[in-house]
Length: 315
Image 1: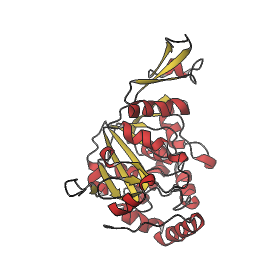
Image 2 (image 1 turned 135 degrees about the horizontal axis):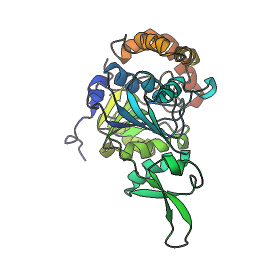
Image 3 (image 1 turned 180 degrees about the horizontal axis):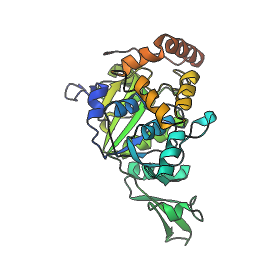
């Protein structure tokens, strides 16, 4: 069957993010410091977005830098932290000041708010938050009783974010998004996040041919009908890792963490790494693309995953 009638979804980073209005609810994929859509996150800051309601299931630098840049007013997730480095300092500072509201979840309820929407239901039952303060402070959790057994559950309200931003390994120009086989199950929540949103923007390491997608159908975790835009952004998760492609940039993560000690040092970091560069490509030059390529080479050589050919790599 011919694909000539299918609209091309490949677009630029600036254009994709420009579609997100101030005050929108935006869900971010990834896990702690792994495979967050950091190129899209930096573009949100660069464009001066404000008053966003962020949603996620397990977050790190992605949420923390958006809060530190004044982009977010509400954060809804189970966790925001910098892994082994320590606490998310920007988030803590802004929550303590009252400038940012937090809606707490457990990991399972954070997953279920996206999974419910992806399944086409208004809520899912979950026993985890019963007997905890989550039931008191999260309005999206309501105690219910099973009509079959009388067992108590928390009904987890389905989330329907305006936008979802995720980062993946590959996509074709039609929006069929693929992940490398390595660590597949660790990334499965991104499927729910992407399918829960009104519009989903996906940044990818590679743009591949539709023929490649057809030859590797089991790697497609997000079919084109769920995708509004695809952005070609190599190292788009940096300084977080991207499973099977490159590891953490420990030096850059430490640089960020030290900068997050105060609002003043955070502003200096943003001026240098985000607002002070024109786009993602200049960011890669600023952080040192040669070192990134070396790290990526080491990561891919240990996995042995099949390399897909790239097309349409625009700068």
